[in-house]
Image (cartoon, rainbow, N blue to C red; front, side):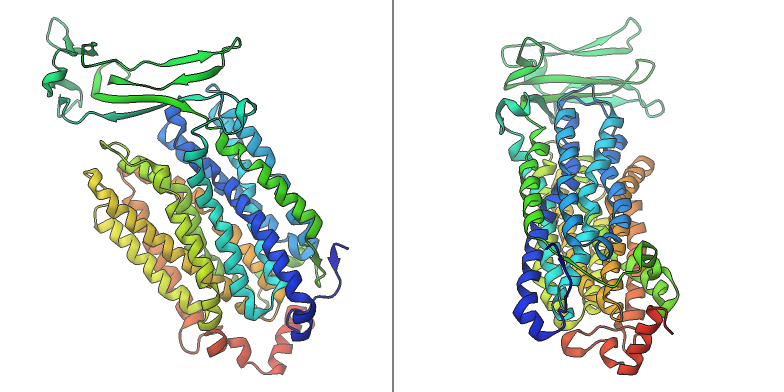
Length: 573
């Protein structure tokens, strides 16, 4: 039977004899599924940084939009998912949510192999990838319902922490899995991946201060003097810069084999040089760069296909072993009572939503934007870092720290953890802004940028672990509302990848760097720090949480006060 008619996790005897086994089994299966939900959610952020290199001609802002759109979808879907568990139950929701994510993975695998696939198609696929983030607001409420309050921080910390490893896994696995024909010819043929790096000191380019047009090009390396020809017209105006082959300088070539349908079946790795001459709409030269170029085979479709078998396995486990808990329910309409004035629910819903955006919104937003940030800020330098070689580190740290610290906040309280980690996030942002790491002048600054970003991931991940303890405590008078609050706040924070990518992209488009975004983010962090301190952390706060050792606001109430709040919640007072 898929539905449990009796569920009393706060009853010690029931928990020991029956509840513990079912709860941890449910947590294990849903966590396994959640890992691959997050992988499918963030697969676009791993794919998008490689798309220009295989031939897609999308602008930087269009690439940021592709990385952002799964976040928009996940936020919308989480608002829907936050209602599912109390009404429909764990078994059907997790089962269906798991298998449906196979669709965007297969579609993306096919689309990425065709350079004629339009941008809008990838936007639709990206939106569907957001289903992997949307169902988080079903997973977490499910876990909160299955566990007693004293273990909710631990259980949800483990689930969210391990689940968020899916972000790291997709960004770690992608560079490896796209390097060979992992699934043979079933996955399709390779694409031609092109990597180009500027040759330092190859030429000196002079530009007019007013028109910004190139007026002169001087070869800086003797070995390139006979290979680079600067062409001018009769008036001496620069017309072109051409590369000629010599004994030591070879032009880059593309060597591929195609089948009868014209599809690439084999790519021979090649290396060489090229000159990139950039022109404006009038054909006037605006920049000249000499590049070292390497071409090789890449199977970018593998980054999507690899998750299909894992989703199928998770689906089978969910169908066979998950159970649903019967809870008192007032239907979908009743779920929105967290926005009512009963027991000051609306105020605390706002507070929890804002602080969750600071924690998980930051984690998910930066996880999605990190690869493009690296590429945009540091990709133009010689020996530029590969975004996917570093992007997985942030989500890995943020996910791991959730697992480690979840139990700690059960002891000391979630509000204290949120207070200190928000201060840590503020410090990390200020370090990046005033350290000059968002406006780099050399690739040597990348290490400082990397450490600053990893610190923010560490703090936001720890902050997120604290919220799993805090929110059910804030709504201790109603386990259903506590569960739904985790879904509701998760829904708004899931817009993080969308908001972060769009605003970072706009900041770069308007000012040329990301400082404006980070300064605005810092101001938001200060606002949520004050909210958390006033309502939940300071001595005598309205709904304080000082952990199992220090007690909570709910523990201090009399039995009569507790019954009154429950009656108000149920509309009986």
